[in-house]
Amino acid sequence: MRKLALNDEILLKIEKPARYIGNEVNSVMKDKEDIDIRFAMCFPDVYEIGMSHLGIQILYDMFNRREDVWCERVYSPWVDLDKIMRTDRIPLFALESQDPVKDFDFLGITIQYEMCYTNILQILELSQISLFSSERSENDPIVIGGGPCAYNPEPLADFFDLFYIGEGETVYGQLFDAYKENKKKGGSRKDYLEMATKIEGIYVPSFYEITYHEDGTLAAFKPNNPHAKDKIKKQIVMDVTDTCYPSAPVVPFIKVTQDRVVLEIQRGCIRGCRFCQAGMIYRPTRERDLEMLKKYAYEMLKNTGHEEISLSSLSSSDYSRLKELVSFLIEEFKGKGINISLPSLRIDAFSLDVMEKVQDVRKSSLTFAPEAGSQRMRNVINKGLTEEEIINGAGQAFEGGWNKVKLYFMLGLPTETEEDIKAIAVLADKIARRYYEIPKEKRNGKCQITASSSFFIPKPFTPFQWAPMFTNEEYISRAAIVKHAFQDQLNRKSLKYNWHDAEVTVLEGVFARGDRRTGRVLLEAYRLGCLYDSWTDYFDYNKWKKAFENTGISMEFYNQRERSFDEILPWDFIDIGVTKEFLIKEWERARRGEVTPNCRQRCSGCGVLKWKGGVCIEGKN
Image 1: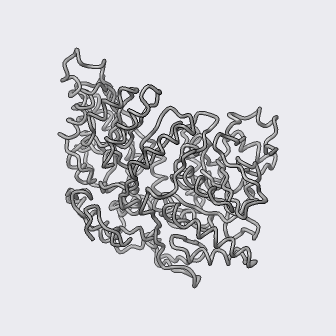
Image 2: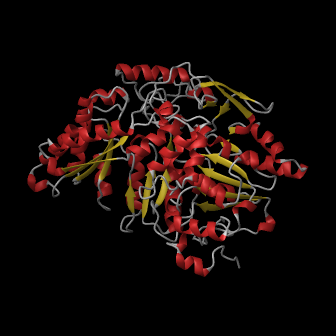
Image 3: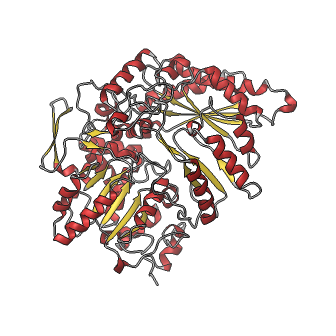
């Protein structure tokens, strides 16, 4: 019988002890004597967030299918347990075996958002692993980073042994085989890293030398090891049907953020929104087979006991067989209390037929993302939506019985004017007016339109990657303009407005586009006590400002200047398939307010299909 890493006395002192005891339904237990590789799969946030992440569930299932690998899970301890572990020198442990993470062969950390970076340092420190890769011993785990933020790994470069650039189903098998081979030969840690860097998609930061110009921009980024490549090519799965997917995902003991079965229906997006990093790095679009989705929907619900299934993708409406899939789910689970969630729907493509079928199970508010209030701004960002399409789509939803709509917008976009800002409130009011055009006897109570705005961050590998950001104060002033504009609207009682934290946004901007030097700020912020920075109750902007002051790093240098096309960007050594020439062309089209057709309408020549030797969505080379 396994022994828990925390005794009863500690478990009684902390909030939600079920976060740490493991042994959940569908978790995998193996005999340590029968395996060659132990892998600790980490999500650097609290259990409830990490257990909601599909990527970890996929890799957990895939790794554990190998007889020679045991993959276990580890999450960031909440602040109460963090304090106890530091005081009592309790090493961070994996849930399944309760063994210390420092005893594993690999520690794999998924990097989903910039404000989890201090939690990554917490994971390393509580695991009693040296924060700097250069200081680790032969007995320390190989620390791997992956996920969307790994597409600019430089702010974290000093803390990771290697980064995995791309989708996890591709070359992990090669990494494991190389590890076993190196171990058999008695090779060193460096020997293994040299073997790893020969594998496509693997980036070893210590094998590269960086120099800077006097103005602070990058002068050169070159390999300093003969095994290191000049370019790291992202890895993707072209056939997403014939690949690993968990039919029996781990079921948490406590309620988590996404307490449901998640069915990924496709990867990539045809739309090409110019602010969206995911839409670029996950190209090309790849759909899962309908019959495969039906099979997994049934098996996952049966194996978990969940009462909701969410159809996941960047743009669910663009899945070519969405109506057939939803119809199947409705019919298959009729009378069984299974709710169907359809996130990421486009308001112009929303099917009234699908809506009516879904509402028979359970009504909830609908979420749409116009992103900008004015048509001019929607053209700048290449949203591909007209006001008429938005109003008509909302009207279909209202006539289908909905009366609550959430609208997502973005402030601080390139070329944005005050007129564009105020247009957010005008559009929300027009949507409310559309509701009240329905005869009173056919309405479903009072209409509630909730508009939310986040602030623009120019992410790597987007056409906006060269754009400047604004200051915290400027973002807030723009939100205030929107708020006042809402008060001027006819249907203001049906309208509600809120906005994202601007202080968090400016920090995200630094680390989204930062170079290796920003790692010093991160380390200093962590030493000053920054942790759980994505949580409002624990975010402390003053500590972050102090960290910038103490390290002499300028936030303005990374945020408030426009990059030139000939500047070396910290992520330029990564090849995502989409060419820089295409991104420049899209940036210039954005400035002119020109719309680029989506991938189903016409190939825009982004380069990704030629890069993989594939064919475009129309079947042409």
